[in-house]
Image (cartoon, rainbow, N blue to C red):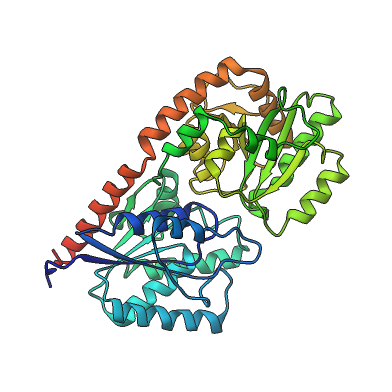
Length: 413
């Protein structure tokens, strides 16, 4: 049935607003698709005790989510059934034209609920990362792949955020045929990061450096994200230890920005290896543009990533990046060039190192410190590229086209 002149109603569901790209995208799209043409409702669940909470982002954006305490990351048959029934009830009352789910748990419960209410709802699901390896055991991953294949049968459109993820979903794991899948890269409000780079916050820099550090001579590297196994912060600690053992640390310091279940063990490891004077655990920060503006470089050590937001933000802030060559990192930093040194290699927009290779990371960190001229050239190219490709206006245009296209296919326009 064609739509009336009423706004197109979008019901957006995400498992939780923990710190990261999915939460930013869910809140941003809810805000951007609330106007004369569109009306949006955001549904979300509870953030874990060891996770940073981005609920403040919704408040700042004027978005008022519907919170379902039973919805969250952990699997629980009782809580998941309760969340399913609540979502089903919301779909029945809100009567969305489009149901757009983000993250695996919300995608499963939301799409199943929509199927039991009405096949007239256009369903869209976004995969935000390379979720089928590195997170779960082999048998669990196989089960989740099977579930996603079944869900894809009655999903109108599947969104992936990078070319490498498109290959994984369509070719490697055969989740869905190509004609259902669209690549929609992430998009952000990047202007605050650009401004922070022009006017670094000296007070923030002092907070991020250890108290004993020489602010004027320190080269401060930031590692930003959850302190959890998949982020592999131990690789960074080991790299710093190698440099100290060889008396090559010079003026290098590391600010670990974030929190999580591994914070205690990581602190113990840094202390045991004698690098706790160079690695400062800073906790979560809300003013992230100020954080990036205060850094000299950014490092990422993950074993798996989708499209890491920290790299996008770092490039927008004009900060050089060294990152493990996993998941969608190569889509951001570009293909390798001839200027390789040691075990790390130079991408078009940053340095990449093999996963779980502390030696390669140590050499990459020293390269960032010792080669300012070459690094400046790369980071300027990276900043220009990311502003052109990962801005908010491009994201909104892409999603709007996707929504209108899927509604047209279902003869709702």
